[in-house]
Image (tube, rainbow, N blue to C red):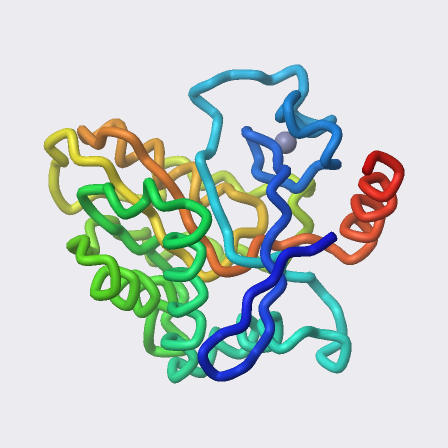
Length: 232
Ligand SMILES: [Zn+2]
C-alpha cells in the first residue's frame, strides 16, 4: 500500500516508504523496519555513520520519461527548470507538517551545496528558501563545495560512491544549532553524509536531512513491493 497526498494543483504524489536503512537510507522491506539496516550495512552498525534522512517520494532512476510519474518528471526537470521549486517545495512542507513535525523545531536550514553550475542555480538552495519561509526557520548557505569535485551522476544507491571527504567546507563555525540539510535528490547519500560530518565537526547539534526524491531503481522497488505483499 502506498500513501499519497494531493498537491494544491491537483497532482497526486506517492509518499516515500517509511522503511529504510539507518546507515545508507536505502529502502528496505517493511518486515526489516524494526531491525533498521539493509543487507549491505548490517555489519556496519556504526552510529556515527547513521543518516537521519527523510524524503517526499521515491525517485525512480533511469526510467524512460513516459514511465515517470508527474512528481518524478518534475524532479528530473528541476535540474534545469527552476520554476518547479514552488511545486516541489510544497511537497516538502507537506511531509514536514504531516510526517516529520519535529523538523519544524530545527534552528537552521542548510542547502546541500552543488558544484554543478551549468544550470545557473542550485536546486537545493531554492527548496531550502521555500521551506524556510513556510516553516519560519532561517536558511543559510553555510556549506561550500569544492568546484573541482566530481558530479554525482545518477547511480544506484548500492554502487560505490565517489569519495567526498574534504570536498565540502563550512563558511563559519556553528554554535550547537540543530540543522536540517535540504537537497532535491539523494542517490548514494555520500554528499549528505559528508555534509553531516562537516557540520558536526564544526559545532552543529543534531543534523537531519530532507530530500524530495530518494533514488531507487525500479527493480529494487518492485522487489520491495513483492516482499511487503508477503508480510501484510
Ligand atoms: Zn544500508
